[in-house]
Image (tube, rainbow, N blue to C red; front, side):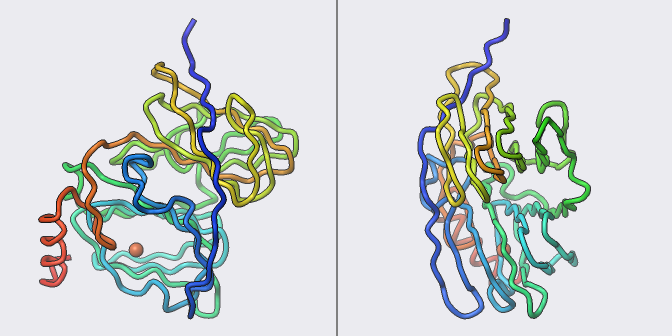
Length: 278
Ligand code: FE2
């Protein structure tokens, strides 16, 4: 008999949205920045509603961004000649590594609704070659159970595995469950993670903790085993995303879009950016 630890939910919070102004119509933090140890390997997750002129050319170094488009069409272009168009259901997994400059702009006239996760990289991976993976929503592998569809963005769900390349190991899935349906998601016991409810409501984890649209459920630790799982049961028709990843356990020094291990490395990032090395 294998020991499979059942995860509970250690904390639930509401995402508060506000209006930054101009073309940035609405923003809320699913994960507020600054909780580097608690959320490790995740740095932040923002939920945004925005129009052209919000996220023009800007740099990143030392981290990855994972962008999930929920509505509208997002154009992307970067300093390495890459470009793409993301629509509803599409995901972009960008490794900034040693540095990119990019623009993330809605198609003119549209308002994009998106989630953007900032994922940390270990010291050794902060200088990795920049990389883009455009994960087309209609090509993501899908696990189907009774009343449940699980779209696998990264890692695996059941025996369905995504071919998304990871530096920091991450399991990322989207659950779409009919009212009353239930599914379990396996995770390495070492991972930190969370569920964000996009629509509907349900019960989560071993204690059946309630969560509804606009709420974040932080996963409690596994009790020792190498493998764990978390249960998700829809009360009303449910749409939710789960992200979980291997903690990095290194110092985090973040300044705007640069996330390094020391102040010296942040100063170097600004110097390199200003010297046009991105
Ligand atoms: Fe960016």
